Image 1 (cartoon, rainbow, N blue to C red):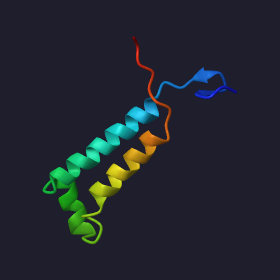
Image 2 (image 1 turned 180 degrees about the vertical axis):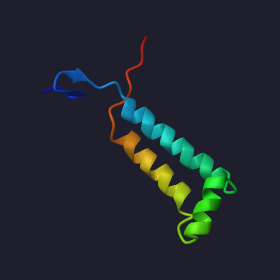
Image 3 (image 1 turned 90 degrees about the vertical axis):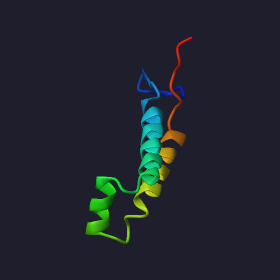
Length: 74
């Protein structure tokens, strides 16, 4: 089996793009700590509210790093 293919279907790199988007969402969440979502998490579980943006960014970066790069058209 060739690298970048799974049972004859070439990978498009969507996982890498998704990981990058998740990482950007994490960065935006950390830049705006007063967002409604983070306030709700802070009310429910105050111990993890400060860690959530960093965790989201790290997960997105890991997904992007271990995924096939997207194919760009020339």
